Image (cartoon, rainbow, N blue to C red; front, side, top):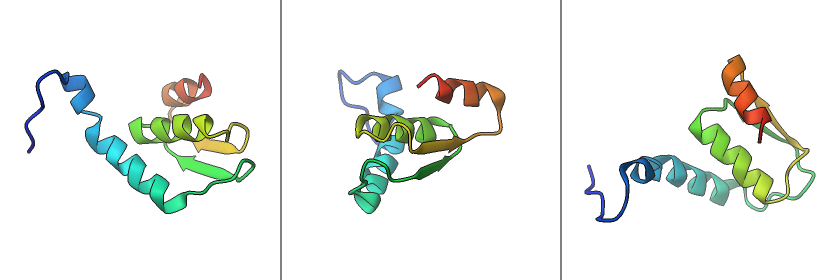
Length: 79
């Protein structure tokens, strides 16, 4: 349990743990070259954050997201 600092909204604080998972994962797989094939399994919050991070690093066409739920699949396709 951690105290949320003054000025940080609860919805921002809620992303702390998912973003820390992303930062650790990025340290493990970096460097990732453009054209490297990447599979993201699931498009929950962490999957969506991965898709965004990889997109920002130029991996746009080589990322595949596997998601069985139609609503989540539609959300990730909009990225």
